[in-house]
Length: 282
Ligand code: AMP
Image (cartoon, rainbow, N blue to C red; front, side, top):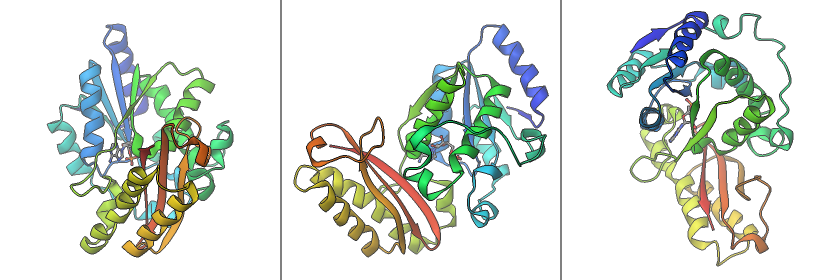
């Protein structure tokens, strides 16, 4: 695996690869890698000639400075995992390399109503930061395909829109969520959970599977209330949302929509750590 720290050097290297008609797959991450990230790498390796992974903890997508400070960094282990997985290139830039003009400013990305619902509502500015870093990374890497996890369902929708609005030719390939035994969605933030909190965190998975199995039996509002109860009784201290939505738009679903596919989404805090998850239901 070749490790690049400089954007220009990586860009030049990848331009040569593209000229030699090899396809480039890109997996952007914030590091603290786990099997969920590695599933994206595997998917990229299956479909593309050259797989590029980036590790960059993007300061401008954190609306909570404490969350940024506490974000786990495990670079040495990440490098070992990526090598074992057969990753061709790792991009490990500094903040200055990604934002040479500084962190302030930047253009406003038009992501429409996605900016103000669910994650957008509870994490103001988050998706602007996501668009900003991906726009920059995509300009450097210029991949044919980019692989992202459905664990961040709304992020996938935002990125689709970013690619369309800015005529970026990369194809977005979305990969199913990898879970721990028991169902907890793998996440870098799980590293911050105590063993007891990790056990309690299963309540989100239980709530989502409850909605999935009972979708026909109750109204949307009843399902939301019951799922909320499961999460709070499971040990979470605060819930941002439990939502049941149309999978294509993330608009709230009504009782008349329950025969069509829907997606249930949750964001909740345990021991001060915010976890998100979602599941296709209905
Ligand atoms: P992050 O490092 O959290 O920014 O995640 C980098 C990429 O990995 C994103 O596209 C995530 O959606 C994806 N990802 C994170 N957790 C999982 C998981 N449990 N299963 C599959 N993909 C994941």
